[in-house]
Length: 106
Length: 116
Image: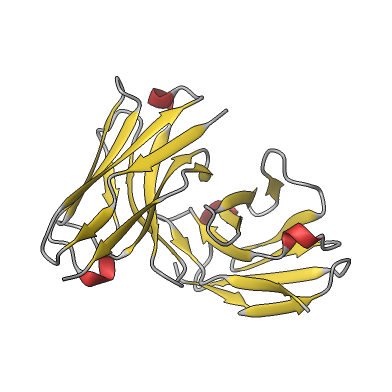
């Protein structure tokens, strides 16, 4: 299943609301869609799984939504530490990742 | 605390072999499936291979099938990736990750460079 993330780069300021999109080429089985955050030189960190379930320890400003082929990661109010690359991943049929969205400080 | 520590990366010539290891701690190793994921320089993430709890089932991306072999030793809390016939496009940071229900904990990665 091919995943396409938009936009490629998102420029926002601390305090803004961020909306990241992930579109699948076909329906993701059981909405098994996850989001990861990755900072330079670090491993990815799981934020959201099952499209909308926050992983352990993830702040509630992060939320996931969507179903079928269209999914969204929303960060309600950006903190300085949220500027990073975000990857979506489907795990309903093997594993595939999107190409990533870079969230940068405006 | 869940920890995954990869090792075994390095510089290898095209056609060569490497064996990566991932030592786990902080959880009951023999109750989790595991995967290897790689990231080429400046690129996105690519799932490479996965293995079931017992090691009886293994899975591979088409890009590595027939060249890479995943295995685990539950007595040593260790995951392995044997990489043969390496190519330049295998150059990447390789991460091991625990699966529950998807890749919930990751190691810090080990770098593999394939170059002459």
